[in-house]
Length: 400
Image 1 (cartoon, rainbow, N blue to C red):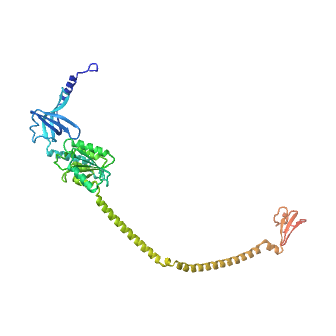
Image 2 (cartoon, helix red, strand yellow):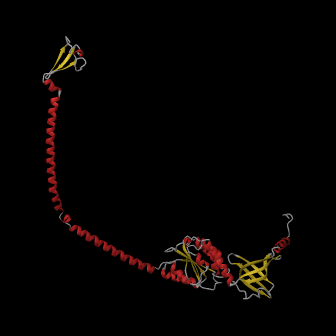
Image 3 (cartoon, helix red, strand yellow):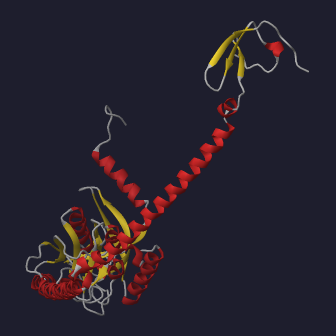
């Protein structure tokens, strides 16, 4: 096989058919989205509720017609079928061998298993839930087309806050397309930076009708959303798994409308009460301060401030007299001490010795004071009590 020697299309189709035939019988599950009859042959479209995947199922055996209760659109079924490739038009279908409707008990058991799985992963934890904004700039609303749930949310939200801004996405909220459409709307709203909270709302219904809101794909999409999500599915007793995953659960769409926005009238009343309390507190504070100021001004020290100065002036004058007296006494003692010290110095000074008739003799050459005649040079300098003499040494007599 090559570009120069290609296989005919019939050969390619046959080989695909041979490969499909080797697959054998398979068990698969899905939701019925279409049922049609052509004689005794029943044609079904089986769809995966969590993805855009569907496949044609053909029943030549009468198993679909014999189903009890009768099959209907949206029914969850498990089928045993043989894959079949049609050579002529290149299409793949499943030939039905057996079909079973998933009963309520089985559905509940599956939901319980999924709930335990998600809880074990921490997706129900309160720590991961995001707080709702107090005053959202814009609100995303995912709901059924022209549904009562949509009207309930909008009516109650705008009754509390007339300026509430909504971006409404109308989608299928039951049946095989519900999960895909809700997830797509959720992704679009979550990507919009103006959307600060998203409400997923649906009215009440049977457990089978609410199954999309317990779908694992949708639950994980809500858990991964960066925007806070409010679940408002059904009525008070209805608790799809989405209620555990969402950041806040509203028991009804009406409650969701009241939760996502503040009550403008109530906020205004609260603001008025706060203003009144603030005004009263300020008035009381001013009154206390005015009374305190008046009491301070009535005190003698402020009423007649010179009185305090006059009483202190006498004390300052007395202290001044005492300081001067003490300084004078100190000066007198210092003068006396200085006189005594001068007298002592004079009595011990060389001049006093000279006055008694002594003289100081120094060598004229070196200026050194002479204490021994042997140290004298040829000339000496003699200092007397009054004046001095220059003398020549003619003879030296050494002492004892």
